[in-house]
Length: 191
Image (cartoon, rainbow, N blue to C red):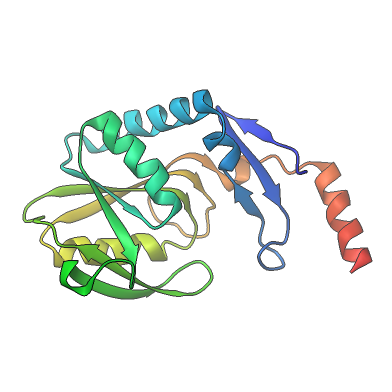
């Protein structure tokens, strides 16, 4: 089992070279598995939203891990959640707009459900921000629905872009231990 690390109450583990060589996958599930850590981290993101974005109308979060964080934070803020869904997850008659975009490892088609966003201020909440593809696709959907989506809030920004992202942790703050590096080399030798 991978070693669980901690940074500012964020519990995580790292899988080196997954899903591709040179990519370090950061698993935030340990934070979700610890009620107190989850509460503290979600509250920290909520506080960041209040401080940086002020009064908002909606939280927008993408399939699937974004729902976990977005719904909790929406509840803390007493704001509604707009779930951005992968194409085909809701009936066509409930889809207000659809977009296609590139994400971290592939292309994606996303839908926004029918909701009146005219003049509404939304913020994006997800677990990890990598290339920004999911965020940009969500921006297009919110704009097509009459709203604005100008701020992204995440637990971890992996710093692959120069986008302005409000994050509790960045990839340069990850603890990748010498032991993990040694394990990585062992695994590569065995391959």
